[in-house]
Length: 183
Image (cartoon, rainbow, N blue to C red; front, side, top):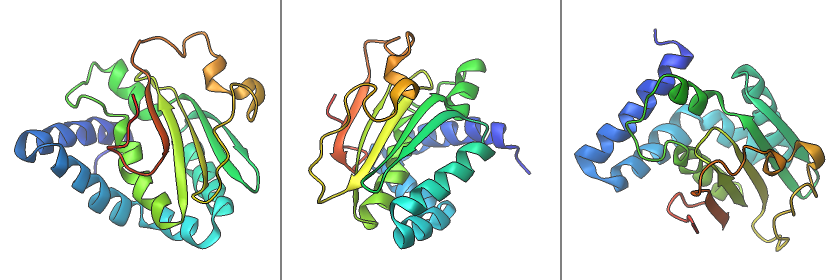
């Protein structure tokens, strides 16, 4: 059996192998089929059935189990995660593992299809250093993403001094497509 931290390295290596063998489209297909519709089918079921409440139930349990450094903010209209310490990306960085160009994209790669099928859109940013934020709203809710500190207060990851550690913060706006990166 492979341990959960070893899994992160194996997962990242697998993304790079798929890219070499079949290009980015094969990586996206893997995220959609093997993760969104297989290994995370329990997430799809609870989110599809319970909406925001299911999202909170799934992520509250999962992020605690993974020992992530995070904050959740949830209302009837929006579910937000501020990830201060991503255990997966942190493991890769601590161990010098970097086979796949943007490991962080796999989260949108599997979560996007799950949220699309449940009727949501996602606004998300990640800084490639184990920090990110997500806001998930019903697709018919035109509300823009919250301003810094507006929704999650002092827990907003964008308030951290180390948020802008690179010039390349990736942004997804109201999408569920892993190819929907704005910048």
